[in-house]
Image: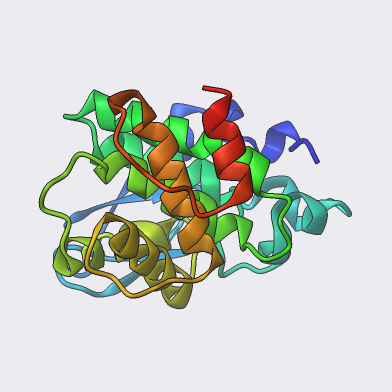
Length: 215
């Protein structure tokens, strides 16, 4: 369903993302308005958001349909996971505009696959964005992906889901062992992105093969 302006990040203002000084060491900590707490990068202490604002999700009767299980929970961010990850990856790949574009294209390519009951749409979309951004990176290692887990957790994913996303990306880009349905779809999404290079590839899903013929 379409999101209301209250939970659509396009309607947020610069004031909805702000810095707070750590009470323990004085380091600056960037908060999004709906983040209840963060770990200080300076001293590793948990710091609570003094300006937390859950907006309409606190009272709207459609909150659960709009933002999922985070509705009504003061301890989980409420902005949609995918929107948050898009913004965070724009920052992460700030020096690589092509990576940002690939990430956005990979997200868009997910849409025809999301109707499959075998797939977790949130996991697939997050993994697709990361795979797109890292597609031309020759140094994708388990250590590098493990370093991205805190970024994924900032979107509202729990640790297990963030690890699943990184496991999928590693499997697609080489060296991983995750071979579930999301893996097969993610392989095809990466191949569709690379189709312009005319690399030889045997699609793993029927839908992937059909989409390739349309390109």
